[in-house]
Length: 397
Image (cartoon, rainbow, N blue to C red; front, side):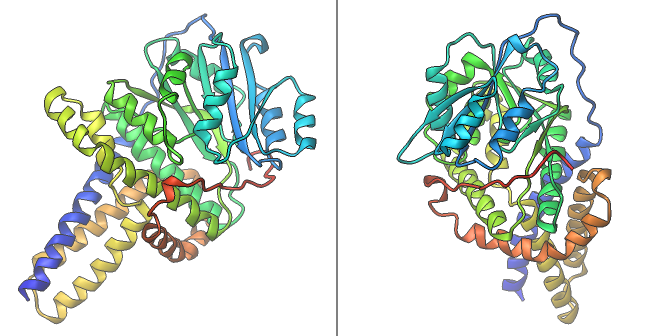
């Protein structure tokens, strides 16, 4: 019994701490109010950087959409960074008022593409906006991000949300995105910490971003690397919930798994790389942001945390009952399960409380299994390029 209870206590502590972390920020996120910036007449010169690897199906639509901004045309350029595009696609892109920069690498990465493009662009820009090839900005996106970047912030993360919810996997991906928006962006800003960045729908002071990117070595997860560098330097990252970018959600289990494997591998890599430095900066400089980010990278994925709490909770509660074990343990499991579920309920926006989400829950067990398999296969995933192919999804649904 003592060994059984020791295992139970270890799991309760680990899962309990992970659950308390998301409960704290999920609760804080309920009090989020969009920061209002003083009106400014200063309009910054913006480079909208859209790197793509073999994204022929979606890149033309993304380029056309990016040109529809309610922002003076003379003050922004859409820059398509074309890696391995078809000649027909390149010719079509050149028929629009966008800059097309072709790049070729033995091993393609988003960081290489961005660095190559910025090396060829002039330094006339004040702001760099980074999008994925499938992203569609709301027409006021550039106006929204102009205000904070005209003031003290070096980086802004926009509200990335689902462009499509056409099947169960896309819905689960959309729900996951909004949970992360609530916990790691809204909740963090309410408590005075930096917003997490996502890899697209984000904007930076141009010269700072160019300098930051020049030292990036990541094959996958370049956004994690620059985020840690920024927080170590003491910069705050703003979140603008009303600056919206639509993002294509995955529609197949295989793509869901590959995408998560890449993300998880990058997170664990940077946790190992930065945790000691983050602890040192917390103690010597009081840098809570940097420490929180390092800790965040070791947090289990939300879908796996929910699965682990439910499965282990049911297993130990049943066993405790059969063995007439202490009621305290059962109470702890019920408490953790309740806190975990409440955190999710707090984080999912009302717009996703619908029949489509309810139907998608049928795929949740498979999603949990896919995440577990991804976790077991993460070794080396951050050292090779794993491309997420996008399809010709039209305007946001």
